[in-house]
Image (tube, rainbow, N blue to C red; front, side):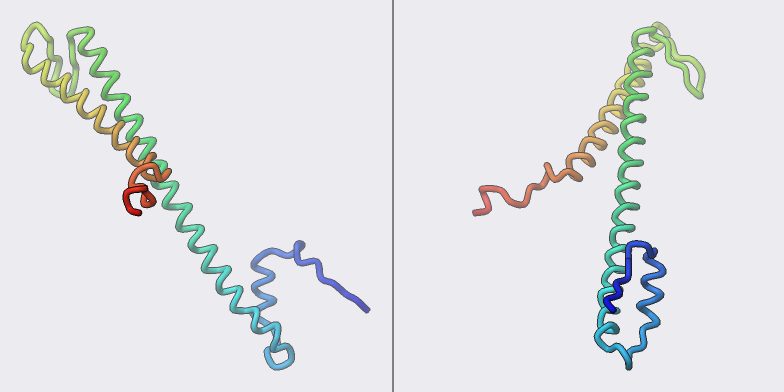
Length: 138
């Protein structure tokens, strides 16, 4: 009687449980396969850690992009209107040009710093930065 088990119907947990309860004395060749299960668990753990790291990097990139765009857009509209409002009140360009100009410069600097940080994380992730195999190394 040629009986084959359809392993695709079982979950990973059920398969691990079955493998953990193999009679090692009766089926020593099947017990050797337990090692591959440990390797599978290790690979799943590495995959999960990699996924969490990628999601963390994605959150950082999205935060940097939105922060940079917010700083640049608010800086532009404040410059265009000549009025900046904040926690400390309202600052008019006509009242204190140097302070107003410094505030706009700071917003532009923060905006471009955030956007360049996001670009660095994206390019570094894709491998475009720090290319290890360059022609100069040969």
